[in-house]
Image (cartoon, rainbow, N blue to C red):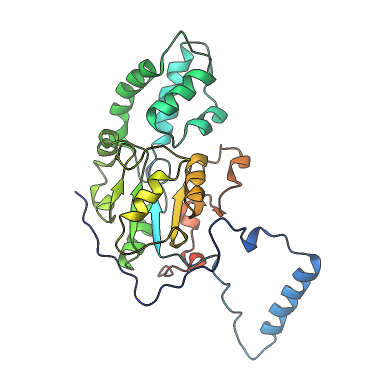
Length: 285
């Protein structure tokens, strides 16, 4: 199903001098003096001989892109919420976003244990029973999932510009097939896909296993600092940072902002992503 794209960037790759874990300049508050100097510099350019202000320097220069899938490329997270709300309602309990944040991005069994423990269902429902009941409900919903805003434009843009791209998803093969069955053309543009039940993925997110496995399957010698990861889940952002990669987070607006702090950049939608901020080819307007 997947076509291995021979994606090589033209020209030399300019690597970031820093590691992904280093604080970004944009997060460093500027003093009033530096702000005034910055404005003075801009005014000087404006007053010059028609010269435009230089483009801002990239946050970092990356060469490879790794995408999470659920809640980032495909609108599937709502299905999990809907099903888990129904299950909890039988016990007179409410499924909230603090619990969802702990479950997102995790392997199925780990997520199920969190669900049972956090909701005080021990003795009433086992993690295995929870997964079995949830599975039947989800299988009916997954094929109807839609692509999220900005996804098609970004993936087609990166592929057309020969930027190597792949998917690293906690979903196992059966769920992946259901979720992507109506989006096969889009996923065929990926160099490869790594799933949660892959033998190389020993531990789920926030372990870096899945992103490091995805990186190793690109052609050539790719370093973690060359990679930009797109994620919606806090555990996924943590996994990217633990792998030594950069992380752009596109969270659900209901997720508490305290979960944003590890990300290098936070966007409300992939429509807001500017490739040049990461040293990638610009969109053609």
